[in-house]
Image 1: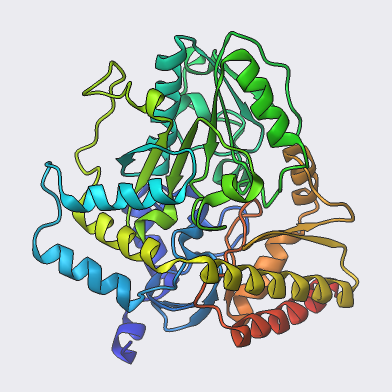
Image 2 (image 1 turned 30 degrees about the horizontal axis):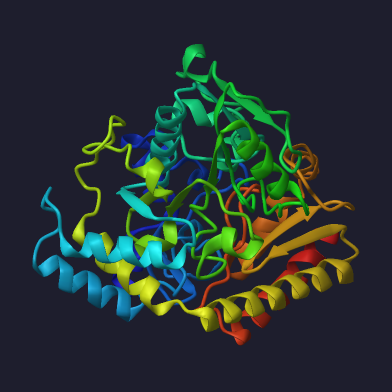
Length: 427
């Protein structure tokens, strides 16, 4: 990056400009730093484990586009595949071989998932899976869990975590009462009473939008049993966990198979994407062979397909072992950093995902997550880490995403920075 470019823009100037033409200055609310304070930095480029802002400052990045990036920023294998695909066109509104190849890769890796429909976002995937479940069961009522975020569609935004929670918005203005009249919200990690009035239960098998909250032993098994007993479609939202935790996602690791899945993030190699899939008998209700309608002009676009095919082809069992070991090294180091500073904090890890909660007790649901956040320590920790050159998510309900580009050396540097940040926090 040239010095001329750095002198031409500051983050403050860019944010002021953005606020004049974009609501809040951002195109996804949590990016505005409202819950942590300060001015967001504007990214000029990324490479591997690092981001570089318009002022020329570098950051060790653990946002990783909220989990969409797993190999590291601007990985040459991904960018080469994108460039090659773009030469032949970016979108056709017609079938392509690359759509078939990516769908085959997903189906091969996820046991019990027979067919997949590609979309352009995780929100679309979750919304479509709910519609399909209702079409299959001919029922209306759905159940979701408090603090689980399944995109911003009307019926699923109630009780959402992630950016909704960070901004203190309980649901959203503009959602009519009728849109959520058939949505029931239950506490995560507790199997709720169900009956034949429910079409679907949608759940993050490992909750990653209220901070990181793993499932208690027996929770998902009990949920699957209740759904099976009452003919309810069980949907796993693996937009974050799918192909982040292992070759078959969370369902493979946890040994519980749902009826439908939602995917996103990793499967696009950093490009916009979503997907939903599941049992053949359910998926074959989708138009044009069934009565449940769903469509998307850019669904299956060849650039996203090329990136997705490349990243999934590169991820094997060794990749996930390495990811988990790096996450374990990071979580252990963070625990030691907080302990050395005398700060009560819980560092929760599941496979390659890491989460930090301040306070003396581990967190198992959204109510407990909110109590931790109410202590007000995350914004201070975030600010100190950012000042030291580590980019965490600018919201206390997000998780930390170590990736394959984070070497042991960079993990250890991060831990040293965390030690200093914790010392500052203690003072």
